[in-house]
Image (cartoon, rainbow, N blue to C red; front, side, top):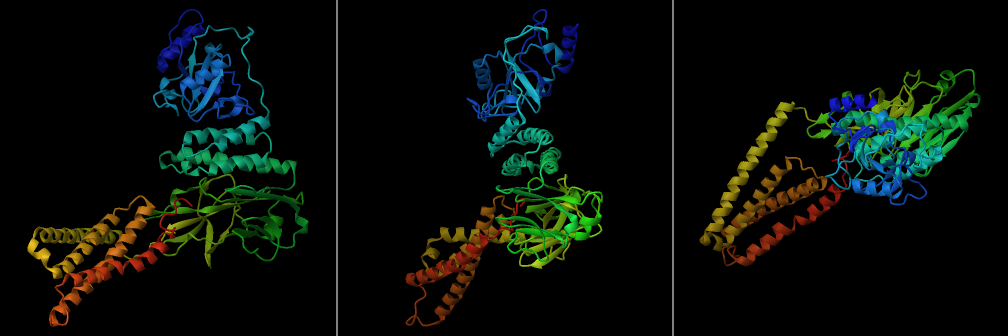
Length: 576
C-alpha cells in the first residue's frame, strides 16, 4: 500500500521513480532536506579530512562541491548513499526508510554545484540523493551502518564559527540563508555571546550579498534572523551573568551591564571609541568617541519594572550597516543617486523596556566624525528600528553639531542609523532639468562633430598643414573636440567610481588646455601685427613654444585637483 501511494505521489509531483520489486526504488531523486533522510553524517570538526569544514550535525562542507566529491567522501566512509544540498553541503547515510518520505519535484534540486556547473547539487533546503538503489528495511531491523552521533551545543557552535570564517566573495545569498537559520536556532538553546558575535562579525564581511534588490524579501528576512539571534543571546546571557563585553571584532562590538537603578545619579552615558566601550553615569560626553549617547535617568526609573531595582542594559555598535534596510518611505532619489545608510549603526536596549513603544523623553544618539557626509553631496537624516527589526523607519530628530558630528534624538530604544540623502539643491522642476540635460548633450555633440570635420579637413590638406600658424588653431579645435566628447560620456553615469573620477580629471585638463590654446591663438594673431623683423609667428619654433605652454602648464592644477578628487568618497557611498 505504501509503495502504491509512493508511486502515485511521484507521478503527480513530476518525479519518475521506477519500482524494481517489493520495497525497491531507483535513485537519484529529490527530497525535502528537513526530513533528515540521510542519517550518517560523520564530519568531525576537529578532523574534517577532505572537507573544508563541518556544518551542523556533521555535514561535510566543501567550497568546490561536486557529485563526484560527495560520492567519494561517503563511500570512503562505508555509506552507499550520498545527498547534495545547495550550495556546498554533502550528506552521507543509508536510504533505508524511503517509504516514510515523499519525493518532491526534481526542479527543486537542480541548483548547479559550486565545483561543476553541469551537475545538480540540490536546492535550498532540498537534497538530491543518489547512490545504490536500496531495499527498504523495517525500522526494527538492526543495521551495521554508522549512526549519527549526538553533537553537543559547543561542537555545533564551533562548526558554525568555522563555516562563517570561510565566507568570501563566492558566497551566495542562499548560503547566508542557511547560516542565519542555523545561527538563530542555536541562539535559542544556550548563551555564548562571544561565538555568536564572532559569527555575525564574519557575516558582516560579506554583507553586500544581503543588499540584493532582486531578492529583497529573502535578504531582509535573513538579516532579521541574524539580528534576532543576537537579541536572543543578549537576553540569555543576562540570565546567566551580570556583565559581559565582546569587543575584539572588526565589524560589531557589544557591551552589557547590570546595575541597581536606586544608585542612579545622572543620565546613563554610552560610547564607543576605537579601543573602548563604556556604559557609565556621567554629566559629559566622553571625548574621542566614534558614537555616543545618553538615556535619561527618569526613563530608566519610571519605565522599568518597579518590582525589582536591577536594570539590564546592552549597547551594540555595528561598524558595517549591511544587515539593515530602508523602509520604502525613507528612500529618496536624486538623479542617479539614492539614499544610503551610513556605515555605523547604534543599538541600545534595556531588557525591561519595550522597544516598540514610544518613551516620555527622547534618547540621544551621537554619530561623530561622519567624514562621508559632505554637505555638497549628502545631507544626514536619522532613522530607527526596534531591537529585533532591521527595517529602518522615520521617527527621530536630526541635529548637525558641526565638524562632521550628527545627533539623533529619538523617543524609542533600539537601533538608530544615519541616512545619507543626496542633496537636492536645484530649484528647477525635474522636467526642466531633463530638458537642459538633453539640450546640453545635443549641443556638445553637434560641436564635437563640427570640430572633428575641421580636423579631418586639416589633415587632408597638405598646404594648410605646412603653415605653422594653422597648427595653433588646430590644437585649439582638438582640445575642444576631446572636451566635448568627454562631457557627453560623463552624462551616461559610468558604473566604475574610478572611471568616473578619471573622466572628471580629463575634463578638467582639456578645458584648461582649450582656454590656454585660445590665449595662444590670440597671442599668434597679435604677433602677426608686429613686424616680422621683431618676431616671426609663422615659425615652427614659435609653435613648439606655444604648445609647451598650452599643453604642459594645465598639468599642474590638474594634478592638484586629481589628488583631491580621488580622496572624495561622497560620490559613491555604497551602503556605508
